[in-house]
Length: 49
Image (spheres, rainbow, N blue to C red):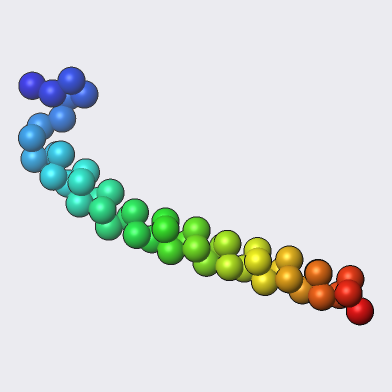
């Protein structure tokens, strides 16, 4: 018996869900970081002119 009350088959489903969603979160993080960098760069260029 598990400490959280899950059957052994549930652990495999949780791991599969985590592994499939983890890559999406990383991609969103990188895309957001790139967008913030582009916006910051545009503001910096406007201040130079």
